Length: 638
Image (tube, rainbow, N blue to C red; front, side, top):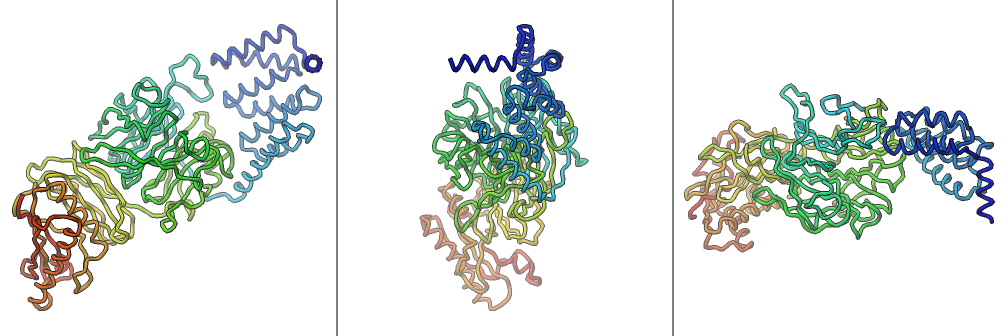
């Protein structure tokens, strides 16, 4: 009886004729079929003729929202947000929510506050929303000094553009495009799909018109959320509903050779699971991939995880040991869209579970090396974050510019577009400023380009800072390093002498791209200088910074198990000759002893000191003498 009375009471204040109900149902069907323009006059007529038909007004407001007509959405709800109207508090909640979704926090709070405690269901939700709006106003009261720039027609299309990605040298730019659906239009009955697009910077410094990356990656289903490795050698992306997939959406990768991309590779478990796995981002060291997943074992809905990566000699990747980033980063709500910066110390991501300005906000966290954890995430603030979704935030290697997608920066009727934003101030920019250099690897004998592994390590910390492989077809590579640090570069390939380079912090970081870095095949009598072996002045104890170089030598010996070497110590021409010979021999023996301690058989090793007797440069200058002070290896058997 209570239910019948309630229905009767509702009908008595919100009565509609059968004709009106029929018209309303027709309009709803049209909306569901994507016929927005056809449904609009039907709903407008209903609202005009029957002011108390609030359901029609709500649906009309929702239609205006779909068609991106914000002012008419608000006006339609204001028309029925009156105490004399049926379902008044429901309408108030809708109006207040509309203000919130349009970033009008003051009006949102005003209308949420009009919900009384007696309306317990709406009151509880309104109080939560008031708290959210108040937090947003706090952020808005201290705007950050951001400067935004639309990327223009060569990057943005007529459709929704999102998930930007850029290489360290800023020569490649990639986006996801929702092809086939214009702003404010329905996708019903249209061929709509997400595809990955790519652009390359021209010789004039301008981006070439962005184009579909092609069917080696894209298919008739959805592909997107792509991420380029720093050197542009790899593209990680998400593909859905493929026969090779484990879940609905899996992470795939493709390898670039010249301007062509290999067929997509699904690495399977443990990177992918039966759940939703997406938003991949490869570390600059090439040994970790950050991603978002709804798999079990997390803190909330979608969490940020990382998985170990091994780059094989042929450039293929192996994944293992997935680890959740923990409660410092993840909340009970959704976190996704991780981006690990080129400094390998700064993580950007989007979250719904933290204090912010609206839906998804962008946060930053820094790696705390001492505590071996991440710092408490910081909201990047207003106006970068807004009441809408901010996702797909990436930062260039130098750390002064970022790229993201938004439909709220201009509200220009073109939907989501890609923007460039200038970063300023501590707590927003990456921890370290990075620089890059391009190079090319060739076979010394044939002069043909070749594929090899490139590793860059910090001399100060003895840590790997960058790792990748050169392009198989061109031999080209891009290496990324921190500014104001000494670092070493090592290039290796089985069957070849490895290449060792050392750069001081004030040295220009550059390689001879035309000549290329020559790799010589292993032959008896061949020599190479270990440029990252270090000793204190007039001493022969190895400095800690030497260990990575020696470990590269150990790997060289293991990959070429029949090779025998002599470690050769050399000094400059200053000082007593016999003393220098003894010093150089002790230094060569120190390297020899390290290799023996790592189980390289003595039968494969010799050492000898030559003092100043085999100079490779003049002893008349500081630079020349520095070049003469060196440790070499000589191939004495293969």
